[in-house]
Image (tube, rainbow, N blue to C red; front, side, top):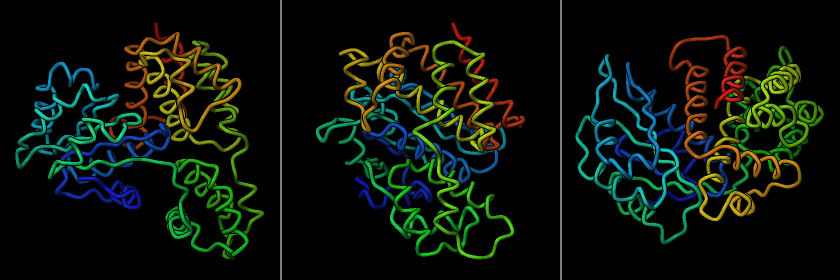
Length: 338
């Protein structure tokens, strides 16, 4: 089934138990990635104790559909259902996905498939749009409305926002991605601890991020260029400025998904980066093209696997670890990959 654009985010937050597999696609890698994280978290929460996230590459499902069939049919040690995450899927994986999802068993786990920007005639889109228990979720640029911002603020611990504060928040949010908006609101809640009055425009301006990615951009590009020292220095500066470990891990994931997409493009990294939306300019664009040339797709997939493990640990899925140390170790591991 095809999910209307206005219902995509609500479905990600509260998955429909009748849907067994979800396709996330769209031109904005960062937004797609953020919704992927939230959907997987929601599905794992519904899976019961012992629910496990199983990561598969789109190419492996194309070559061996049974790998996905085995993944969704497995049962956790404590009886929880698995959630299979298929990343980097394209039309070539359609037949494999169809074979694996054709006749789901009543106790099968859920599947999340992540793809890039798929056209209307895409075979993969048609599979999910035409399936009774499948859902196609197109992720397109869509600034959150006032109601959504108000709900997110309340969740973060900011129950009231003044009229001028809401205008400032809407203006600021229009230039940010969803994870950045949520991080802004979480920082605003900390900034206002013990304050009972509605949040003001001045307070929102004080908490708004400066620049596109700031020190986190420096950290991820340094790690991608295999310079662990500068990566750790930039991370320390980012943490000192209030950026969180979860935000850093998400920035690593966003950057390496773009690296993987550019490195896998048949017409070359430069052309692939030029197609990306929102577009990249100047040093960030040059850094991404350079990284895509230096990271073969299989190495980028290995880095994404490390990032996914870190995200799971930060969200309490797996062994606990100090959050800041976990992200610092992630940066070093990526920077020293060969």
